[in-house]
Image 1 (tube, protein in one colour):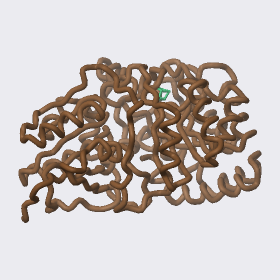
Image 2 (cartoon, rainbow, N blue to C red; image 1 turned 90 degrees about the vertical axis):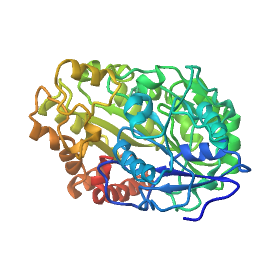
Image 3 (tube, rainbow, N blue to C red; image 1 turned 180 degrees about the vertical axis):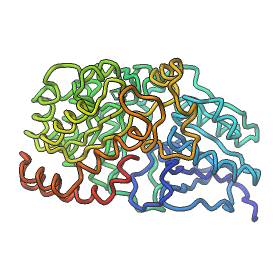
Length: 437
Ligand code: SF4
């Protein structure tokens, strides 16, 4: 293998989800790597990206360092890729949320781990890498990175044709503390924000007109979101984001979002079962009638809704899930992702199940299983076989032609949006296996 001289070469790899073996060309940009690229001085390093969701990883590439940001659902794939490169004496670095949740496990599978926000750890690692003094671990001291200085370098994406949606970050963290959420133990309800003017500058520099905010909760602070929304109005862009139900109660706020280009919101409704919501500590969803109000505000402003729905909690029965199904079906929600409740490591939910001796696998993310199609813990009202297909069966039911056309006929959205919903639903019907991703 020809040795690389002068500049050192870094290969970023976006690992595939552990249970999705199939490659698909249609992917959204993996945001983290444009940030790392921006933080990496061009005079010292060359960087390339391999997106293992799109193509196979070539383990014979000429590189000095492999870097992967890993989540719980990509950890197993990342460990496999890491093993292959380490066998060739190419050091591997892991960062990302799974490293924060399971640092010891990640350290066993890489040469270096970065714990915490990359804007703090990455420059320290680069300096050591340049000097040949890489350490085993780079860790934030607990001080949150102030997002004011954040930028991205999208040239890292040029090899691939991603979905024409540019990912962008306004805030980091969520003010809620849902029992099952893997962001909760990471950010501990602390939120940092970028300067709205910086977002506008980044949007203006990007030739793309469609953006997706990757924030855990774009509605953490209505005043700050409104300030940004007002600045986005003259840009005439389109954007989507993830937002909690409570943020969508104010009709004027939702109207402002629509005026600034909001086209679709992902809302974590999870369930209509109040006992389950309480057990989940899903405080954002507890107010009576808040679902109806949020949906009505979105429909009035022609904002499409993608609903996150979770099944398999202790208080869920066939009847309660059926109620949730009827609720979302009645409101003609474009995208309903019914998924089995997953015990992510580090969460209060995982800890509770472990204490109660109800985990079927201690580390399910390292098993050769499709987690959304497999029972991972002992539930109160469903046996293992029922649990394995619980969420998946509701997805299949939601995307039958009968249901799709019924929703199209009854929809209260404007005709253009209804056609979009119809086409989107037909598309989702044929890709519903991927919906569980
Ligand atoms: S509202 Fe959403 S992002 Fe926030 S803690 Fe709950 S599940 Fe996580």
